[in-house]
Amino acid sequence: MPGAAALAENPWIGERAIADTTRRAYLVGLDDGEAEAIVLAEESQARLLILDEALARRHARLRSLTITGTVGVLVRARLTGRLERVDPALRALRDSGFHVGDELVRAALRLAGELSD
Image (cartoon, rainbow, N blue to C red; front, side):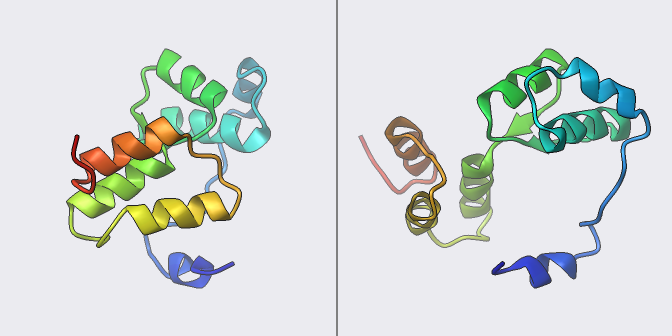
Protein backbone atom coordinates (compact mmCIF):
# COMPACT_ATOMS: atom_id res chain seq x y z
CA MET A 1 0.00 0.00 0.00
CA PRO A 2 1.56 3.33 -1.04
CA GLY A 3 2.47 5.50 1.90
CA ALA A 4 1.96 2.77 4.50
CA ALA A 5 5.66 2.63 5.38
CA ALA A 6 5.84 6.40 5.75
CA LEU A 7 2.79 6.38 8.03
CA ALA A 8 4.23 3.58 10.15
CA GLU A 9 7.31 5.71 10.84
CA ASN A 10 5.29 8.47 12.50
CA PRO A 11 5.40 8.31 16.29
CA TRP A 12 1.77 9.42 16.65
CA ILE A 13 0.45 6.43 14.69
CA GLY A 14 0.09 3.10 16.42
CA GLU A 15 -2.27 0.32 17.36
CA ARG A 16 -4.30 0.37 20.54
CA ALA A 17 -6.87 -2.07 21.78
CA ILE A 18 -10.09 -0.88 23.34
CA ALA A 19 -10.39 -1.50 27.06
CA ASP A 20 -14.07 -2.53 27.10
CA THR A 21 -14.82 -4.78 24.13
CA THR A 22 -18.45 -5.21 25.20
CA ARG A 23 -19.16 -1.60 24.21
CA ARG A 24 -18.86 -2.57 20.53
CA ALA A 25 -22.18 -4.41 20.81
CA TYR A 26 -24.04 -1.13 21.34
CA LEU A 27 -22.90 0.18 17.97
CA VAL A 28 -25.41 -1.76 15.90
CA GLY A 29 -24.84 -1.96 12.17
CA LEU A 30 -21.16 -1.00 12.24
CA ASP A 31 -18.26 -3.22 11.33
CA ASP A 32 -15.71 -3.98 14.02
CA GLY A 33 -13.24 -1.34 12.81
CA GLU A 34 -15.74 1.52 12.90
CA ALA A 35 -17.18 0.41 16.24
CA GLU A 36 -13.75 0.07 17.82
CA ALA A 37 -12.67 3.46 16.46
CA ILE A 38 -15.67 5.08 18.15
CA VAL A 39 -15.13 3.24 21.45
CA LEU A 40 -11.42 4.05 21.41
CA ALA A 41 -12.15 7.71 20.69
CA GLU A 42 -14.42 7.79 23.74
CA GLU A 43 -11.95 5.93 25.95
CA SER A 44 -9.02 8.11 24.95
CA GLN A 45 -11.04 11.35 24.85
CA ALA A 46 -9.85 11.92 21.30
CA ARG A 47 -10.14 15.45 19.97
CA LEU A 48 -11.01 14.25 16.45
CA LEU A 49 -12.24 11.03 14.88
CA ILE A 50 -11.99 10.37 11.14
CA LEU A 51 -15.00 8.46 9.81
CA ASP A 52 -16.53 8.29 6.35
CA GLU A 53 -19.46 5.90 6.66
CA ALA A 54 -22.78 7.67 7.32
CA LEU A 55 -23.98 5.28 10.02
CA ALA A 56 -20.67 5.43 11.87
CA ARG A 57 -20.80 9.23 11.74
CA ARG A 58 -24.34 9.18 13.20
CA HIS A 59 -23.22 6.93 16.06
CA ALA A 60 -20.24 9.23 16.74
CA ARG A 61 -22.43 12.36 16.73
CA LEU A 62 -24.83 10.74 19.19
CA ARG A 63 -21.83 10.34 21.48
CA SER A 64 -20.83 13.99 20.98
CA LEU A 65 -17.54 13.05 19.32
CA THR A 66 -15.91 15.56 16.99
CA ILE A 67 -15.63 13.98 13.57
CA THR A 68 -14.37 14.65 10.09
CA GLY A 69 -14.04 12.51 7.01
CA THR A 70 -11.30 11.82 4.53
CA VAL A 71 -12.37 14.81 2.43
CA GLY A 72 -12.26 17.02 5.52
CA VAL A 73 -8.70 15.87 6.19
CA LEU A 74 -7.73 16.83 2.63
CA VAL A 75 -9.32 20.29 2.95
CA ARG A 76 -7.60 20.87 6.29
CA ALA A 77 -4.28 19.77 4.77
CA ARG A 78 -4.77 22.28 1.94
CA LEU A 79 -5.67 25.12 4.30
CA THR A 80 -2.63 24.46 6.48
CA GLY A 81 -0.23 24.24 3.53
CA ARG A 82 0.39 20.50 3.71
CA LEU A 83 -1.33 19.82 0.39
CA GLU A 84 -0.93 21.97 -2.68
CA ARG A 85 -4.33 21.17 -4.21
CA VAL A 86 -7.37 19.16 -3.12
CA ASP A 87 -8.77 18.50 -6.61
CA PRO A 88 -6.14 15.93 -7.73
CA ALA A 89 -6.42 14.11 -4.40
CA LEU A 90 -10.21 13.93 -4.74
CA ARG A 91 -9.86 12.61 -8.28
CA ALA A 92 -7.42 9.95 -7.10
CA LEU A 93 -9.83 8.90 -4.35
CA ARG A 94 -12.68 8.58 -6.83
CA ASP A 95 -10.48 6.72 -9.32
CA SER A 96 -9.60 4.20 -6.60
CA GLY A 97 -13.29 3.46 -6.00
CA PHE A 98 -13.79 5.69 -2.95
CA HIS A 99 -17.28 7.19 -3.19
CA VAL A 100 -17.30 10.97 -2.98
CA GLY A 101 -20.50 12.67 -4.11
CA ASP A 102 -20.46 15.62 -6.51
CA GLU A 103 -21.95 17.98 -3.93
CA LEU A 104 -19.24 17.09 -1.40
CA VAL A 105 -16.54 17.58 -4.04
CA ARG A 106 -17.88 21.07 -4.87
CA ALA A 107 -18.11 22.00 -1.17
CA ALA A 108 -14.57 20.77 -0.52
CA LEU A 109 -13.17 22.66 -3.50
CA ARG A 110 -14.95 25.84 -2.35
CA LEU A 111 -13.59 25.50 1.18
CA ALA A 112 -10.11 24.85 -0.20
CA GLY A 113 -10.32 27.96 -2.38
CA GLU A 114 -10.17 25.98 -5.59
CA LEU A 115 -13.70 26.74 -6.81
CA SER A 116 -15.57 30.00 -6.81
CA ASP A 117 -19.31 30.46 -7.19
